[in-house]
Every structure is written in structure tokens, then in C-alpha cells.
Length: 376
Ligand code: MUC
Ligand code: MG
Image (cartoon, rainbow, N blue to C red; front, side):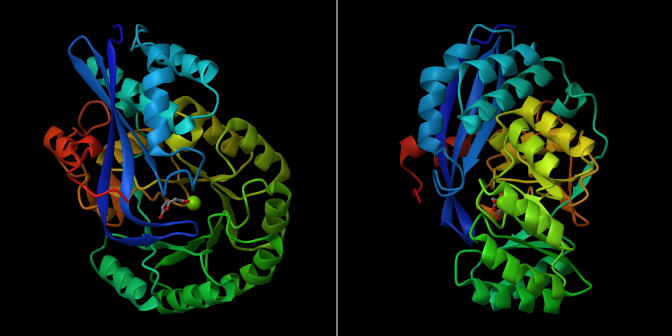
């Protein structure tokens, strides 16, 4: 089943509220939607970035340009059903550009699964779970607003794990904000923080015990991604769990973190790892090293979220759940049906491929070249 054509679209979707991270405030999320065509079938994939090339090295504009110019020719003409060859070609032919490669890989997996009348999870050997606990990120930038949001989501039985984005302001002020939330929600929810590389080691060493004392369960990527030695020292010193996110994007990062015990938990993301194959290898390294897994996100639409969820469902247990809440943060999920979220978990859809269908009218509305939506 020869791949004939690849289309890419830049898409911007406004968020329901401003989302404040250490490195950017997001008012509209930016996406590249990829469509891979073969024999009348279409597979869909997605890469989401947060704040352009700020979370990672790639922006949506660069992802689109690199897919169109360099990556599409690597896969056009290849057999869409031979996924090992496709991912291997992507890995060997293109350096870096993990998000761009992952979006194409996701679309080819969707296509191959549809051709076989299966879900991507079935194609990967079958799901081990049909629901994963779903965390929510509190990132309005205001303690009272975050607390009201958490109370509402708890009452709706939507989320009972909350990740708080810090690292963007004065560290002591950030910690006071977290302590207030942790105390108010104690015994009813778990609290985790994501520093997004925002602290140096001295600051982290000074403040993590305060977070620990307030009952915070986990600290995500407190140090810059290069500071693996520092992450190892923090992991050894802390009773709460330390999670690596930006620092673990490849098997080489994973093996280094595992050998040095520079984290207790790895956040998996299909896009940062450059596709399904590398994400599965990272999960295998975590398993071999006795580390736990967390299903990370980049605030995807329903497309990328479903693409991640198909793989995550085959990799359980996710001891720390997942954060595949992207479609709930943006105004529009871009799919014809919404993913099911209930009883504090996200549920695996039963349809073919990634399990959801792209809403073509919505793609048409939000694509940037139609100029109908604002760009952050
Ligand atoms: C990250 O660093 O984990 C995921 C959820 C969220 O709020 O931000 C992202 C990126
Ligand atoms: Mg993170």
C-alpha cells in the first residue's frame, strides 16, 4: 500500500483560559495536522508545540516546512503497512526534528490501522487498559482561580490529580502558591508541580523540602534538561518523586537517566520521542530500570491526544496516570466526536485507527492559511 501524498496544515485554536508556563503564556495553541494518503484512505497525525520553539527546539512553522521539504520524500512511495521500515527511514534520514517525524509516523500508523480495520492499539498488540487516570494542569496564574477550578473539576469527577505550573515567577512566591493549593486540596487530590526547567540546583534543593512538607507528590523537570547530575542529586535527596520530562526525549537520554537514577518517573510523549517506536523503547528502559511512567502531553487536539492514548493504552501501568487533557483546554477538539472523560479517567475510543475522526470543516475553519483564527 504505497504512500502517495502527504499534506500538512498549520492550525491555531484558542484556549479556554490563558495557560501560564515557566517559559510562555498560551492563549492559542499551535498545531501541525498531517494527512497521509494511500489508495483512497487517509491517516491523520499531529504535532503540538507550546509557545513555538520554547518548550523544545521545534516550532509549528519549522515542523511544517521540514515535513513538506525533507520528510515527505522519505516516506512517499513506501509501504504504509510496513511501520518498522517507515519509522526506521524517518530515524535514519532526518536528524532531530522529533515532533515533525512523530506527526508523520502517527498519521502512517493511523492509515495502516484503518487499512486493517483495527485500532492503532490493536496494531501494537492490543490495549492493556481502556482507561487511564487523567490529571489536569492548574495554570491560570492566580491561586484563587486555580483553587476554584480544582474544586469544580473534583466535583464533576473529571480530575483528582493536579499539576501546577511553576518556575515562571519568584520561586518562593511560586512555592507559597503551591502550598496553599496543596493544603486546601489535601486528602482529596494529588498535587504535582512542573517547573519546566525553571530552577537552578540550589533553588531546587532549598525549595523541594517545602513542597514535600506540604504534601506535594511529585516535581517534574525542576532543572534544565542538561543537568542530569543535578537531577540525580535531587532524586537521591527527595522523598517525593522526581520526574524527567524535557530531559528524556530519546533512548540515550533515558539510559543516562536510568543509569544515574536521575528521576523516579519518565514522562512519555510521542512527539518529543519522534514517534511510536522510540516512545516504546523509552518505556522499556524505564521498565528495565524499575522507573515509573507518566503519560505526558503537549496540549494536543483530539487528534494528537487519541494518537498518544492508543500507544499509552498498550504500555500500562502508568503509575502516575496521564495528562491527555489538551482537547478540554482548547475551544475546539478538531474531531467529530469528543474523547470520553469520566470518573477521573480518559477512555480509549473504540473506532479504527487512532479512534477518532478529524472534523474537516473545523480544520478548514482553524487552518492558518484561511486566516479565520488568531495566531498567538
Ligand atoms: C509539559 O512540560 O509538561 C503539558 C501539560 C501542560 O500544562 O504543559 C505541558 C508541557
Ligand atoms: Mg513537563
